[in-house]
Image: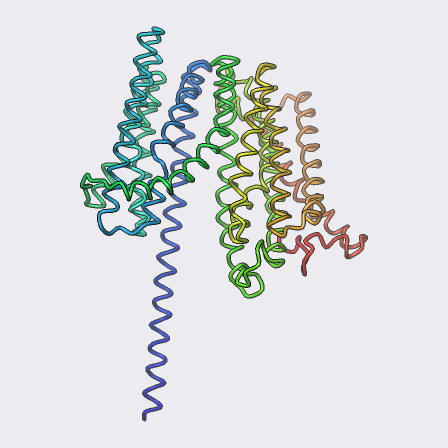
Length: 522
């Protein structure tokens, strides 16, 4: 009887554990889906606003907004200071969150004061009233931004990702409505700034309502020292990434004028709409799949060895090849069809941006391997190497944009293509030196997507030549080009893979340098 009772207790406890695991898994899946949904809605809303703005504004007006927004965003990075990350990192006892909120409010007021001072100088000293009013609206946007980041940190720390996602969806929807309404009713570039302001205020008020919290304003010198010791690393890394991201717009606007800055920023925005679809899922999947290997006995760093293990390196090698196979046709298709996409999305007046889209799309292909550098080196206990690499890449990118911009906006984009080659080499060196990635195997594995890309380009160009001599053209021909390009790419990879298995030696076709062929993973 005692044995039966013990077995029953064991079964009940196992069922309870399984039930708890099931509930936890459902909670994680639900949070992930809400986060993904919020990202999709934000991307679609911003893209819709961008398309309307490009059709209502001319390139000089759009360039003025982009130029001003880039400068203000740099000020936002300094004002936020990594407060959200510190909220997620620290405990919430002894009024620590209240002190973080106090510092964030002070940072927001300081940033707003700087912005209003700049607006006064533009108005009084240079008589640039239109630019001054744009800076005023941006300055009001600066005020709640640091405090809103603290509220987001609290929601994430409390695992309330569903509420945060709903707030982001609602805030971005409000921003889109206000911006598009203003653009269609003659608010000009002020409509875009007003949309940002509405989104930030709505998000802050909604977060406070969900949290049911108001900060008690207080501050201690000892805690501030701890806060800023953490903040300086986050702020430095973000500033470097942001400077590199906006260096093109800032330098082109300063050297060539706001019209060329508008073309350049529009091209960047179109390419980023595609790169966000590739980059963010790639990083998340890399973290998840690499972590599983790193936590096993064969792949973990539990032995105390520095750098990634061979098992993790093999996993990363296959992942980089697979990522190149998937991403290459996306960016190549964007480069080949840039003229059509610019005409359809932005209008005929933005035709000069097409060549910029093509160059920046090719640049993005070279940046794809870098998506896995951070998770790979972090799990290999070499994350300290990443900030230095970001600094070097940023200096090279900014230096080349400064050198090439006086030669024209196309030369500026070509300079960024050269910077991407340098970044590609840095990523390859880091991954092979500290991530155990076999880059010889990666290059062998990239032969297939290279051949597929060449065949894809040939099919698209050939159909385009045929279309010029046919009465059938326009959008129908463009759709046919895209479908033919995709089918040609896939068929070429499949064909050459079969040929490699049949005629090439086993050592040559084993591109993954592991126990299995990488193509079997596709």
